[in-house]
Length: 273
Image (cartoon, rainbow, N blue to C red):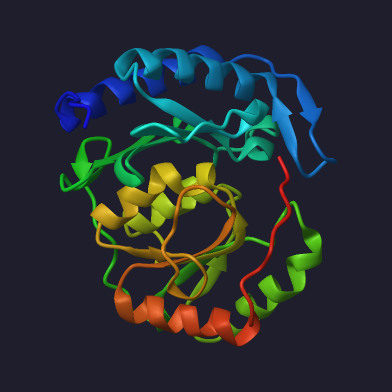
């Protein structure tokens, strides 16, 4: 067992590093590269933010390793693992839209102990430590008390695998008459944080990677939310998965039933980066 500094001290240091990364790279012109077609892109800002985060977070925990989106940075064989999405919502970032965020999660022996998600263009900094509550810009946050009929559902259409658009659409079509409305912002980390602070109430996405949700996972759970994989499967922070989340257990159960009505098997995803 490696002894680390107090989680709150570590959280403050991580938020400083994340904000420094945003200050350095979010205001400069970017070069866009297609990784696998126009739907899956990377910018030089993604690469620079990731490198900056890896160098500085490694200094905080020299014994740690990294699971990152860009450049196939994968190592989970240590007690502490940083899971990084340098820019979640890269298409939004490249097009000048506001809904994009830097996401950092820290696992200890597979358990989420720290999460930071920063949306620089909106000046929203979300953070949480295990057992310490969830915060936005220093103010404690909590999920809403909306019932299902009052709820806003955030969702997506499986951008990288558009053959899965139909089951996603079927989930939306069943949920829409039962809830208030539907939103799609284009950043899983940002949307889960919106759920954590009560701006929306439900979340479903068919295909996400660990770096899409790892930073926001603890923020949401510390804020009182419920999140799981397909059919209540525990998230392992290692593999692609379906995400179902809600502001409370009743709404979660209802959304989970809707997903199961339209998706009868756990999807099998091929490795794509």
